[in-house]
Length: 191
Image (cartoon, rainbow, N blue to C red; front, side, top):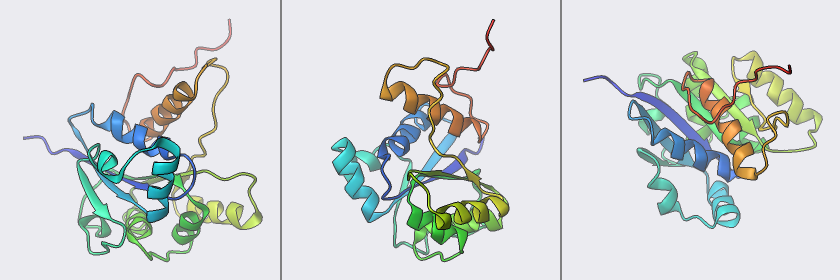
């Protein structure tokens, strides 16, 4: 039996819950991938406000779920092998926690583990404009090997809906983990 590739998804209180939900929806289509979800209490507020979605409906999309305070969960240990972690959306509070190694909840602890094990960590920050603390925290995470991936839409593909922009972003995010999807249109240049 082939072992599944494990991917951790953290969702926090920044706007953009649709990114985390869409990542889970896409991962469900790939039997060789296994999703491990943890969402903060502020993330649950945004999930309900932005998408009208319940915790149960979100949890039903994931293979395994954890409570944000479940600090002894398997994803809090480097011995639990994963492909890495995505935090989408990523609040500035969580970014700061990761940048400074606070590990005050399961999301930031799992991110710390991913960094210390030299696995891929991708943060999808949703804030604008940025202040100097945000920029410095992004720099710190980048210096530690993390990837800062703001969900900035590409207009050259002429997407015409929010769903299309989100899908393209999710396609690019998952491609960073080697997962090819049909969500990403490869740029062919201008003739």
